Image (tube, rainbow, N blue to C red; front, side, top):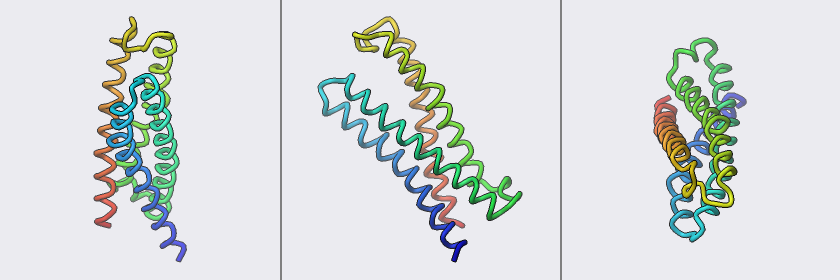
Length: 152
């Protein structure tokens, strides 16, 4: 019973994390930028949503890694779901605590102007591009994680 509950929680954690990544990143945020006339507001809301996804991801990843280690012991280190989760967590941490603070600082320095219409636009675009690629990699790894979990 306990093992079954742990497995169910692992499934919930993985699907909540990956589902929120896909839902926010590829549905909600594009709708914000398409629908809101104020792009600064859309960017602020998108940033808040991405942070929530990141924290959900961190909690989910910690549970998934701990669960896999508890269930498989040292052999977890030879299983692809463990490493997929670890890489996703690492990318999430880099994005949330590396890219996002720098991008927020650039936005703050550009005020009252929009960062995209400031001297910081080039640097912001570069960081945003790197963060977007990182998010895409996380999203694809998330799909792979779910597929690997289905096979088990």
